Amino acid sequence: MKSLKALILATIYTLVFVMSVSAQSAESIWLTSNTTAYKTGETVVVTLNAASTTLIQGFTFQIRYDPACLRPTNASSPVPGMNGLPLPQLTGLVDGSYASTTPQAIYGILAQVRFITLKGCQTNLSLESAALAIRNEGGFAAPLAGVVLGEKNVALNIDKEVVEAQAVQPESGALLQLTPPPVTDQGIPGWLIGALTVLLVVGGLIVLFKRLPQDDKSKASKSSPASLGTASLQIKHGPHAGKSIALTKLPIHIGRDAMNEIRIDDPHVISQHVRIFTAQNDYYLMDLGGETYINGKAIRKSSVALKSGDVVRLGKSTLFVFGS
Image (tube, rainbow, N blue to C red):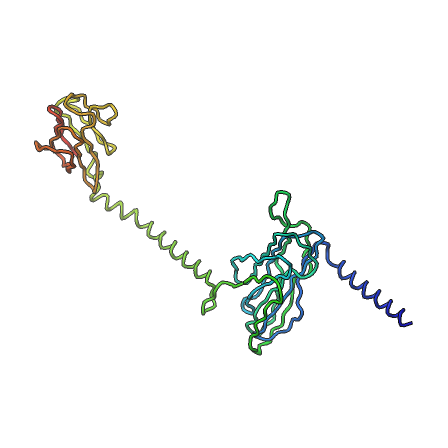
């Protein structure tokens, strides 16, 4: 009789276990917690579970939390060979990722995630997303298709009574730090302050650039060479005598070579004789190695400022008057 009762109980336990297993999909991930009642300062431990008939080589998860009630500390995975991959954390969202070089069979705990309670409150932990990773035919990591998210929420009741915080170390597995971004004394996240700073800087630059064109325009009207009118050369002697050449684009080169902007077909003018350019709101003439004279004064491989009415002679006979 006792053996019959034992057999019946064993059968019932087996059916309950099978029904519990079948409640989860062949490929599934779900969130659980051993207890839901805590005091301020205690460590909350939630467990990420998975069942998969396919060998995996990694997994990822995101758990949403209330940063006013909880602060994440770390996660650990008991799966052999799984190594944590540190990721930048966002306030209010734990982002975990693990990877292994060898395929692993999974049925049970993927990771345990720890939080410190900050004050008395009622809050939830929510599994936002999770995935199992495999190596595809190309040898690259890829999410396993068909994975179902089971239980995604864990309700927590945190008492305002403060207890001394107890450091809970993982019994086994790779540890992954989950440090959230710093928070200022006023409770404003650091990223928000950074964003506001960027907006202020950008706004200041916009105002500055709006004002600059007006300042540049007024400045140019006072001292820019263009404000003095288009410069020109009045050819008085030599080839092109009697012509007026407008200097609409500077710098220009004058010489016997056809590659110059102004060509002077004079045997006493070298291939590239002089260069005319602007600098510091003035016109300048630079001698490039020929015989060059300004108002009768020889210029030898140097630059001289040009003024309206200056008489320039190149070689022995080419002569022009600069005008602006």
